[in-house]
Image (tube, rainbow, N blue to C red; front, side, top):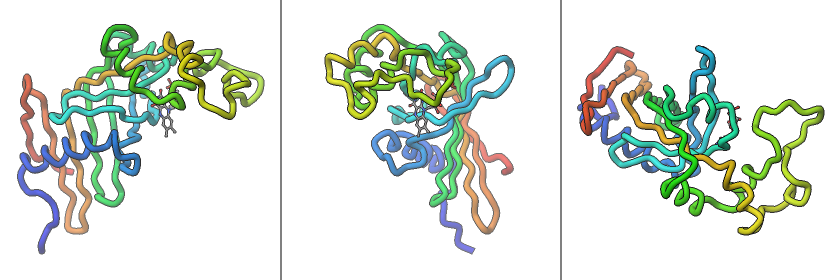
Length: 201
Ligand SMILES: Cc1cc2nc3c(=O)[nH]c(=O)nc-3n(C[C@H](O)[C@H](O)[C@H](O)COP(=O)(O)O)c2cc1C
């Protein structure tokens, strides 16, 4: 039977890196909004995040978040991270495991802030940190910004709450579902190279 998928680990690596690096600019890709899982008090702590950038070599991933959020505090300068997405059309699950780092200041964070849309910056203008208990289902945004994006000037108050989450990948995993048997491959980072092997699904 013809199997419609790549059959060498090098081809799989190219497929993985292509899917991740294409996702930030493709809102329709399921890998645009993967699940990012951190560890809180030895328990898994998952949530969906927008993937803002993924390097062509599959080694670095960038997300944006509120510096006051529990996950930013959990990760700090170094924390274990898993990033997971599934494309039901391709029937491919991709997993990244690596080390996360929160970056709030410096040229890198500044460039990320400058490149973010005003509509996205609005999140960082909420009065209280994400997860703060409230008595009503409120967004926490200022009343005058409930139905519009902030202006460039208004948005600047959110800069101090803005942070970049950088993920340095240590492992990339690929799982392809097919009617004639699933396939799975694991890549471990060795310096600036990936070493891949097939593993049983
Ligand atoms: C489609 C979608 C996209 C999201 N994108 C982000 C994001 O880019 N950054 C972020 O911090 N939270 C994002 N969130 C919200 C998170 O899933 C989460 O609820 C929030 O960040 C609080 O997480 P925490 O309490 O684990 O820190 C997104 C949620 C959804 C449903």
